[in-house]
Length: 326
Image 1 (cartoon, rainbow, N blue to C red):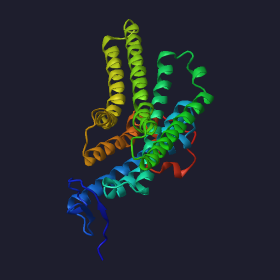
Image 2 (cartoon, helix red, strand yellow; image 1 turned 135 degrees about the horizontal axis):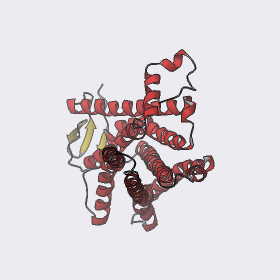
Image 3 (spheres, one colour; image 1 turned 135 degrees about the vertical axis):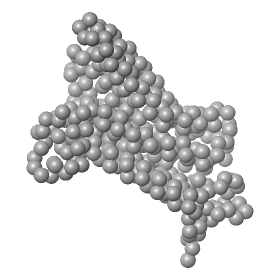
Image 4 (cartoon, one colour; image 1 turned 90 degrees about the vertical axis):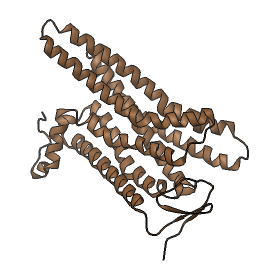
């Protein structure tokens, strides 16, 4: 018997997993080729996200060399990104590719709450890592006193508590909005203005300022050692610093900025953006959780050494927790 889900709506968008009958969307028992390919692609993203961040988790937990305050921030980031791959991806695959495009039932609200919480946690953890890098590069002499275990714990708590509060406010605003026949100003202000500001725009501005400062300091350091090293070596170091910072911020902005730009444009200009476009941009933001392990872990040689030992299952052949990673 064909599985049938009918959702009343007036959208004219063509959905790959639905057949259109007048103003209703009926889920077909035999998904189209496009729908199957979409599920396969999204499933692949989920698997890569989980595996990549799982490698980071195992590496930091197992190898004692990686037990540092800085890597604790990377561990927190990996937990957020792992949960994005394990929880948000499946929820989005189930409901974003199906009826959530055209309805807002309970499961859709659950999916949104996980999406907002974990994605915001990922962004704030990235911000904390940028602060850590700022002190490491710009204030190396006081770095160990400024970024200690207690400070890192506070950073991690803030990175997780703020997203939870934002998600709770967002869900409560949505529930109250359903009971309001007119616009509820405070609820709309919280859900559509304050939420994006605190979960994206402020962290982005902070990270841009911090990485710009890091880049300028790194350039001065390169110029200061040109008298003791060859010009070629100094030039190589400068190019490497530039490339690293460009990758860090470039990938982050590439994944996140289109979604929030579209959201802000829709809010400020009262323009209706097709739901399929919004969902596609949302998936693009989630892909940042897949790329983070490559940016923040694969970049460092000791993580690459740890990954090789884990993938080759060498760690199961003995106790290598004290191994010196190169």
